[in-house]
Length: 228
Ligand code: CA
Image 1 (cartoon, rainbow, N blue to C red):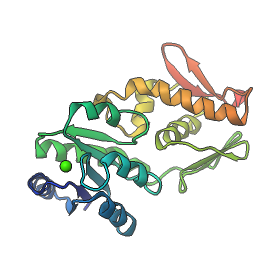
Image 2: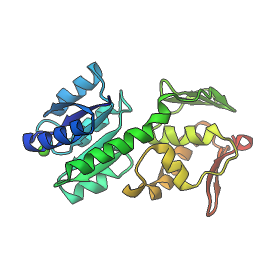
Image 3: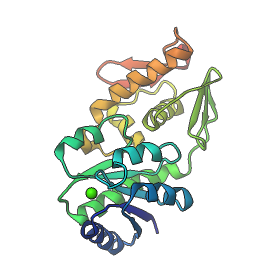
């Protein structure tokens, strides 16, 4: 049974989520403070976090940033204000989805299911230790390039991992999005280009003249070992 950690300071909202999730067969833990949730996730990791943005101790955004230092667990944000959405769908937060209050608890449960389903194939990562100058360590979520450890965000890691897995294959933005495990309806597709841009900048810091990620106009991107 997947275990869901709900981090929400309003008991009424937490109650409806707990009920909806348990009806779908999930087990749940409810905490109202972000600090407690981070400690709990280290002690007893849940399979997915539902994280309120407005928490009494630190914001959900800050909590997610701290979480990402040690965990790749999927996160769904609960946001109260539409102006928060821009930050949620932004590049740096590392959320998998969000819902805006007031929401339907059943809708949230459906999204939890969808995300866990997308995550499932990645539970057993195909070991692809080396591809040209790249060295992938799926366990540690690390990639070395020409012997240097790349400092990658979670999305950059997955993006590069997808490209490296199939050299010369042209991936569409939509396919790359699938590899990230984020919902296509959240508007992430246009941000693939931003991730690629930032990834290329990091690769250039290691090998300025190389261009391992090739752009195919109107089609998408590929990894080219010849240019790595
Ligand atoms: Ca709140």
